[in-house]
Image (cartoon, rainbow, N blue to C red; front, top):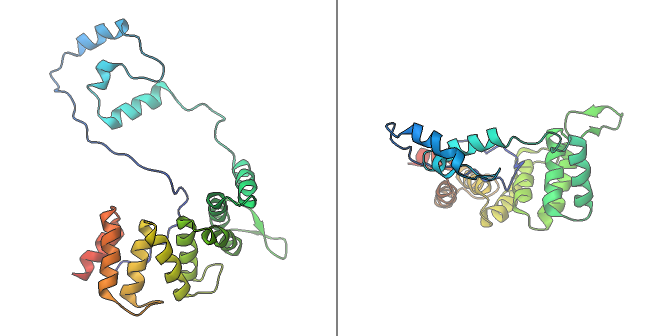
Length: 221
């Protein structure tokens, strides 16, 4: 059985779009494309229509990156990211609270211990921010906090609390929480062992494309 998904959601709203466009036949007359391109006006954010027809989605994306490279200096430094998140988190924004928790968990946000020594990471402070976000019903924070209770990081190990948090996040569609909830039911951790419920949650996660959940389903057969 695959173990719990030990992963924090550092970018909860990042969607990866993939496509399977078809290339034009290799016999296409490329010289015609080359001679006609100068006659067509194309804005700086467009690919010429003749190239649009011959490129796959991945090739289009790569070409756009080449003709429109990211401007230097636009990305925030870790300090700027932290200060922005902390400002929004202290104002009560659950997404920012979760993001700030992730920074403390990974060590991207600098913390010091009682002796003044810089810590590699700060699970206790991370858990505190996850608590604030999870209390507002933010699914990613519920999952992250559930994982910390399951593993005993930053909080006392409490599988019952982990199941409770995974359940809340899973019911909102969080795919990793669905898989982890299936693991808890299968192992009988925090809840009575129940293969039927384990299979149910694995199926829900697998239906969203979660490879771990599919592997767990296969292992149960």
